[in-house]
Image (cartoon, rainbow, N blue to C red; front, side, top):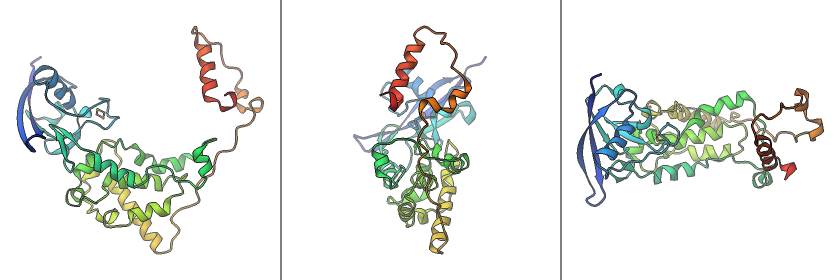
Amino acid sequence: MEERKVIFRLRRYDPETGGYREDRYEIPVYRGMTVLDGLIWIKENLDRTVSYRASCRMGLCGSCGMTVNGRPTLTCETQILSLERDELTIEPLYNMEPVRDLVADFHQFFKNQRAIKPYLIRRDIEEQVEPTREYLQDPEEWNLYIQFAMCITCGLCYSACPTTATNEKYLGPQALANLFRFYIDSRDEGWEERLAIADSEDGVWGCHLATGCSEVCPKGVDPALAIQLLRREILRKSLGKKTRREARPLAPLLPPEEESPYRAFGEAPEFTVEGAEEAAEKFNILHDPRKR
Ligand code: FES
């Protein structure tokens, strides 16, 4: 099979000079090879000084976002041949300060994420400090927010957003989508303060609905939709409409072991692997508060 070559043009930021320079590398491409694989190949074979961020190489950690041919891209999930180009231009993500070469600074991004309180807000403080069991949640309630909980904080939406590019105080699509994810979670009781955070020019009213955020999201989160739904909630509230129902309570306490319904399924089969029974017992002791 004929070997295909692709040129990687890296726009590398130099913190010493505060400017960029472009370096070109020709790399052999095989079927299935990702843009991140290409960068790794360059580092291993041509130039050890090239810097970029990556970790899981499977689209989970959100570290490897870069701008590829002008588009914010998760490089470990993007196959080179799928781009159908002989040359790729790779830069750090836009709307973030560059650190070195292809690495962008996520400080502001995560500051915005912290500002929206990305955790369940509950009044039962005791339960938060010393959790005893889970909160009830129906599959339908889970379905409402799970799409917005798929975010891997890769920053692609933030990098694609024209409002973020022009207003550094704007919370950005990732933080607002995450705010909506908690707002709509049936276990959360922080809806008043969440709407107050969203209801500003640096919140949902800053969005111009360019929808670039939703286009580049590698997980289908659709931040533009979350922002529109948040606007609707704010308007409903201003019209005196009910926006939220009561938060779901804690699940009932487990029945004593001898009354457990799981006994109806009979005894577990014998262990077949040597040492597995001891390991399972250790696990039970570790995870069952009644056995501690
Ligand atoms: Fe983890 Fe790409 S390296 S998402």
